[in-house]
Image 1 (cartoon, helix red, strand yellow):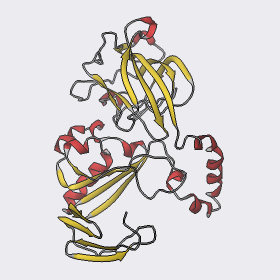
Image 2 (image 1 turned 60 degrees about the vertical axis):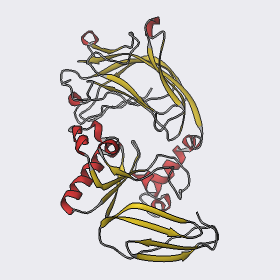
Image 3 (image 1 turned 120 degrees about the vertical axis):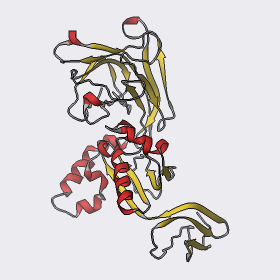
Image 4 (image 1 turned 30 degrees about the vertical axis):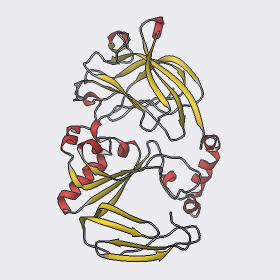
Length: 343
């Protein structure tokens, strides 16, 4: 942001453009088309001088959609490719999730990242492979903007006023507006939640519980599981939450895993199990699903994190609170890609 009426000059790769800010200090410039390449230094001159280094010129693509686009490279089949994801001319940007009833001028705080094994592992697998193949074919810098949100419909990505102009689509907008009255109360609000999980079992057949294989119960006070893996908790987008083992667990013995805190409408946290210590795939083709015990106040979602459930390296992802008590056993039987469950 600059002062109102301030003179601004922008220079990039030998090209310059000047402009005067408007009454609110906003401004924008147009630079001529330039050949792909870099790195360059972008200079912004006004009352303050700003230099942005390591700027690339090349292809820019938006990767948008639902959970398939949001799915991380580290959990994909062949996810070991993350170790080779060292492409300095590929840049990654993830748009933070935020619900708003009005268009927003800016995203929440975020930054471009150079593609590396560390940055690519949590990026969209589809987005990464797309960028990598384009880079190999074109030989120019590639930028991918990931803006994906699991479970969203196409209507939520389109300007509602544009939809209302179409006689066939207008009823969809009207129906969505009518059904979203409760959801609107969530915008900008934070709600408390507390969920406990225990006695995870792999099941061969949901109708035959005697064949279940005890996978994890936390009774030894650790987050290790019976197949040699471990549980982790990711609170990157939910800093006001905490994971801990609490006693007693189910049946008044041992421990259970508890996740608690507060989330707003767009925050989520992930409680994840790896089948093996190194995260490599495990043959689970003889099992058809997962059963576990849960209690507390809130809501969670479960998903298998691989294209085929007998080759996956992760089990569950629990997110998003809502009011409502639960204390029950749950069965999760996945399809060929993912399974979902709400409590």
